[in-house]
Image (tube, rainbow, N blue to C red):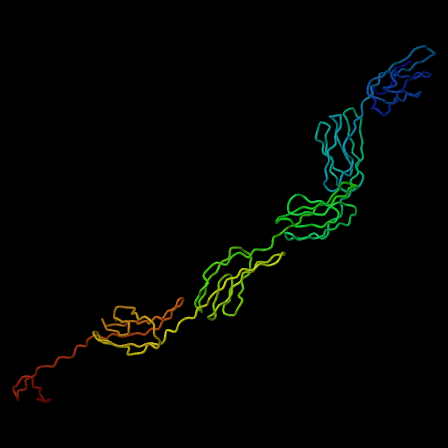
Length: 395
């Protein structure tokens, strides 16, 4: 018979068709375990190996032979369920030189028969692996939808609880190590420590999950107000705090405060407050400020001029003060006697103090110098002829 025409290889599980131009022959396979052949020349790959396909024509008593190699088909291994929107899994194949491709999922070829499948939108994804021999393997991957987004997620206080829910039923709750815990069946979340915690809701039927981050806060700390607690009425002081983010206020009507600067209005005791607030509540630091009365400096009375070398006595309407002079024109004693030292003007101050506050009364004293008197002219009238006489006008 004529030579057998057709391919020399067949994938296991696939078929090829051989033919011969000589009619009336019979097809046979030397190894049916490797490949079988039908009466019409259709060869089916059974297992990897080689078999000789013969075409025997009895009329002439001769046969034609054709070697067919059955090639192993790649087989994609790995879990064929994946979650949508970014979930990734690894797949493998024993044939290490092929290439993966897919619909409805993203496949990355890593080489050596390895690849990764990343789920996109929910549905059924077909993944194909093509070996250099041309044999292919296909697998279907179910891209499962994620659970619905959680509801009821909000910041927590340490020791506080809240209940989170999910519209997708049948799931299980879990929490990562850290700031929160959650009841697996109830969804009740408890704040354990300040920071952030992750809770997860997983659907056992698909293995898909959704995560949420929960912030856990501590009860606020108000810190400590620092600075002096005494001030004179009408003056201001500046207080400071050891923590930031708080609000200053005054409890009474004797002072106002803004940014830690206390402006006093009247004598007395007022309480300055610093309040720090967050979701977990408020904390307040207090500081009492004593607003001391300013003493009365009274009024200085007495003559405001004195000659050099002389003295003048000044008086005050209140007692207990201290006399001082600003310049060196006047020497002032403890009882208010001012002595003129040199010509000019000097400021005399009377200072009255209590434990915290001081008041002043002042007056200006003018010191007069010696005035030179005009000399008397020595005229000797011709009439009298005596010394020291004063002539009449017209002499």
